[in-house]
Amino acid sequence: MMNHVKNARIEAGLTQLQLAENTGVTRQTISLIEKGKYNPTLKLCLAICYAVGKSLDELFWIDEGEKP
Amino acid sequence: MMNHVKNARIEAGLTQLQLAENTGVTRQTISLIEKGKYNPTLKLCLAICYAVGKSLDELFWIDEGEKP
DNA sequence: CACAAATGCAATATATATATTACATTTAGA
DNA sequence: TCTAAATGTAATATATATATTGCATTTGTG
Image 1 (cartoon, each protein chain N blue to C red):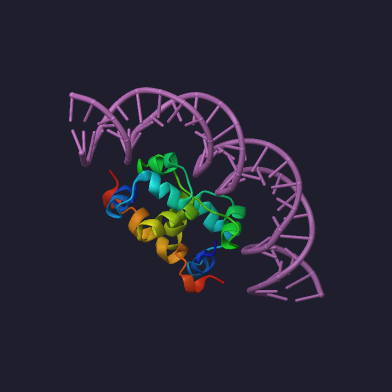
Image 2 (cartoon, helix red, strand yellow):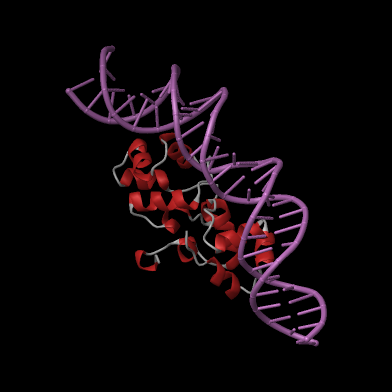
């Protein structure tokens, strides 16, 4: 479940803890999502989008070519 | 948790049962998502996108103006 | 109208997303 | 180098997404 959350978070100047607080979840949850080890809910995906100023497609859409 | 799944499904000429089978979930799950009573996982959101040929933003992004 | 397909929805069970706590490791700055 | 902040990660607990079954209601078509 690859995504672009980590890059977007860093671009937004946020730490994992800050993003977690902004989105109402735990730092672990953010960490695992960034590592691609979680399958987040849509609600959380949207909260992350709002927090870092990106769209769902920008953060979570994976083109075939991007799959390792 | 409003979305545009129902319209997209109908445009794609699929029934709830067909979309459920294509995405590997139950018809109930599709029904509840369309009714906005569920908070689906990203994986399922992507499966629905692929099944109906739409992007995450097209199906699940809710503009402020759209909120009832 | 009659009949079948499609949909809504309820109750219970299961799988898994997320919380909580805690500790180890890495990274950045003085 | 030293230290604090940031990050990785594990164990257990809880909340909730999803499955399963079943039946009622709606919708379309002859």
